[in-house]
Image (cartoon, rainbow, N blue to C red; front, side, top):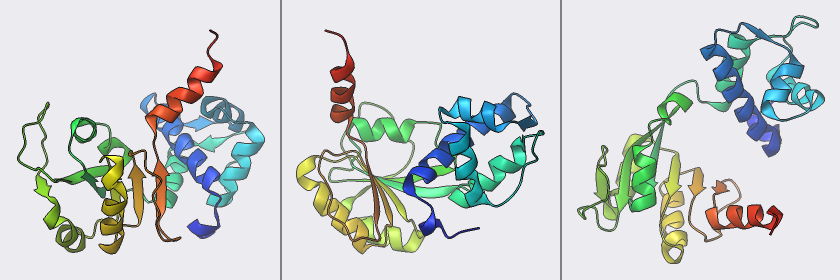
Length: 208
């Protein structure tokens, strides 16, 4: 099995999609699936799916398809989500509080263990079940709990400062909901989620 760094980022994304499709098949008690069926569910071509799955090693039988449980387990082991991974969130405002309250992360292998905010005691629009700490405790918490993933939901003007603090404290992956393009070292992975840009792209294709 190749090193994670040798797998194209687009293939990593598609493997995540395959995992979710397989999980739905497991929920429906499906034991085997063909590459054609799985590819259709994932919205890719069968040849692309088969190429992506070569990163997991050789398995599956021609004419019989893939064992759903085995393929799901292999993908999750490769992705590191075969156990709950701790995640912290910075910026417990409206969006941050909504993400904290989302119940689906645990099923996908992630657990938001703490949130950090410049005003940890302020009243919030919804109940937050995890502790919200002052930003001053960020570095010590990350180091003592060995957290490597973080979500940023702060205003653009402070996003880079927050990212710097996260990187210095050992964070290796950031899911960035701020509109700020973050400048980080090459070994730090950042995925940007800009809702306005996504809507703008959709709006371009809407018939006026």
